[in-house]
Amino acid sequence: MDFNIYDFTSFTTWVHNALTSSMSPGWAMFVELAIVGVVFIAFYAVIGLYLVYAERKVCALIQNRKGPNRVGPFGLLQTIADLFKLLMKELIYIKNADKFLFNLAPFIVIIASFMAIAALPFAKGLHAIDLNIGIFYLFAVSSLGVIGILLAGWSSNSKYSLIGAIRSGAQVVSYELSVGLALLSIVIFSGSMQLSTIVESQANGWWIIKGHIPAIISFLIFLVASTAETNRGPFDLAEAESELTAGFHTEYSGIKFAFFFLAEYMNMFIVAAIAATVFLGGWMPFHIPGLDGMNHVMDYIPPFVWFMGKTAFIIFIMMWFKWTFPRLRIDQLLKLEWKYLLPLNLMNIVLIAFIVLMGWYIK
Amino acid sequence: MNSEYLILFFLLGVILVGGAIVFSMFVAPSSKNSAKSEPYECGIPVKSDAWIQFNVGYYLFAIIYLIFDVETVFIFPWGVVMRDMGLTAFIEILVFFFILVLGLLYAWKKGALRWV
Image 1: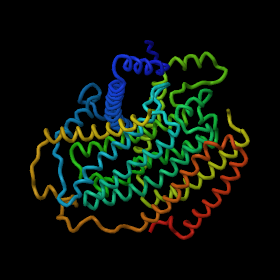
Image 2: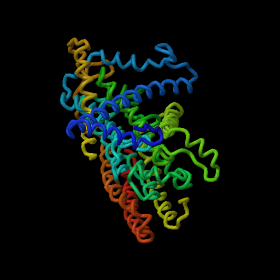
Image 3: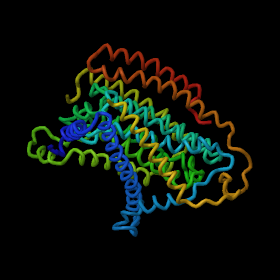
Image 4: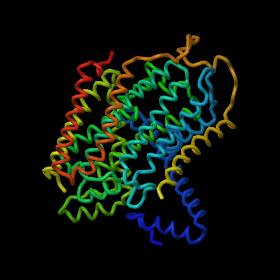
């Protein structure tokens, strides 16, 4: 076996062969799925918890505070302590709530985010599912989460929840269009919807550089629209705490509340990972043609680190947005999408089609 | 070979949420109280149900969204073949967008995009 941090293909085939040779095919598949499951649950939990920590630290940095610094070194264990606290809190049921839908809602938001991280390419040969319609799949499953939000708001039978859920629904479905059309621009450039193919097509330069002006416009639209799609500030009208207490999860308590919170951060991770994969080259190192020395140094950094680094960079920008801009009003929010972003996006796609037709991009 | 992974990730979500809720049921305290089980409303007694009709503005945006979402589904396959098809695909998308933008302009002029 050769474990190579630059190419996981040989490692995963080795695991697969070792399992199939030592037991019956049914058991081998079961063990393989169990390994993948445990790895992804651990990854999901660690990323979710540390994004909450990162958010609090970034917020503290911007507001000139210290942030969590008591539990563990630099407060690193703070969110884990919070998780255990929430696990031990009472699960309150609302008298007139629709019990079935009320319990179903956290399942839906978490399942939607789990199915989305399944398709992300973390490094060469390191992805659970490599669909040939990868972008389409991500676009589809990431929009499932809004059903959970709507159910949560509707089933609680509380006015704050209902207003928050409907606002969130209007916002998420509106901005989903811009997210989809911004991703489409890179589909046109690369001629494929498969995420591994899109990453491979950026070996000689990331699409944001190769696609120049229209790709940069798409990237900016994607950043704004995905911030809105994940219900994050300055677009966090769904849980505008100064007017709606907590929006759609007002009536949730204990660990169920924690899942809505976790799903919000995982959705942020997912959109940042999509942006990193599609616009910034995924796990591809940064290369400048001609500068061989620098390219070799860049190649030395493992792909997984590249991927997580780019994702962390975009997450930082999204946190920066949240702690810098004041919250929008619902009419301003919908106006921004339908009267500015959507027409701009449609024009941008025609521009991209024209540039691809003329071949005015770096191939 | 991918379909079992889709089912796996679906089950992972169910296991994570279900497991945590079941665990929480054992360790969390529980005390029934009629005031606690009322929905939150600024601390005053709840007036009425929240299952009411809501602003038509949201409804209109949902309808326009539906049209554009279907359009996005149609446009993705076009995006894949655009590079190979060249001029034909470009002219087709111009026609497609012309009709689409006409629809958007109609909704705009009718005031469907204005918040009321």
